[in-house]
Length: 101
Image 1: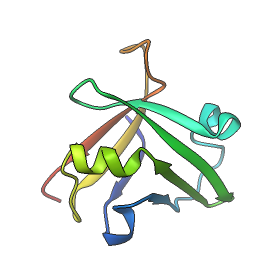
Image 2 (image 1 turned 30 degrees about the vertical axis):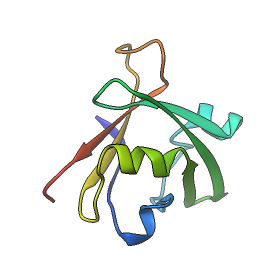
Image 3 (image 1 turned 135 degrees about the vertical axis):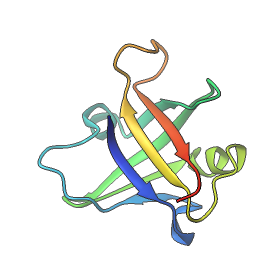
């Protein structure tokens, strides 16, 4: 199950802004280290810069723009980030692009 899902809008192409309300930090290892490693559906690893702007606003940047280009993420696609749950020793999180929303 995804920790976070979002339909991509034009502002998310260069950096992903997360504005959901969470009871606790959704990505604790990223918040403490300033970065998060994710593995995409093709098995590629990506390291995103992770910044907590406020209680309800987080931003992913850095390699995010390269991930968007490589995965041909378009406005209207959904992106889902899930916990590792043991499927990879290389990444903390899994990221998927869900098309056609």
